[in-house]
Length: 179
Image (cartoon, rainbow, N blue to C red; front, side):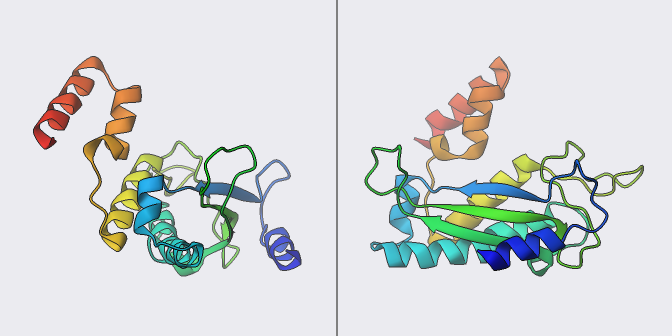
């Protein structure tokens, strides 16, 4: 714990007092996804670590459009197997703390920016959260051989929640043809 605090507190070069020092990210697989990650808590924990290191963080780094890779991201994670306010027996999830700056302490990183792949102006790079969700989902499916139903996909859920009526109708047609 002390190492995490020390590393995060010293990786803040050129940040304003109002800038965040880090971002908290929550990764929580569904019950169906969890079953693909192993039968025991030990297997699931190892699978989660592998997923974070091999899939999530590389896509996270690449999404900044600043030529970063997984090794450039300063992050720490903690895996939990239950949630105090949850009735679910098994609810593994991972809390990630990701530094606002890269490992070299030179580049500012913000997954909450609304800029996307900008090349001109004060902000270079940006971050596309929708792309990250889609990449993390397809990376999970590939890593664990998970056959995701269309109703479980980020694209489907996002369209049904935020899409126009015509987009929702198209998605429902795809759902009918997939089933």
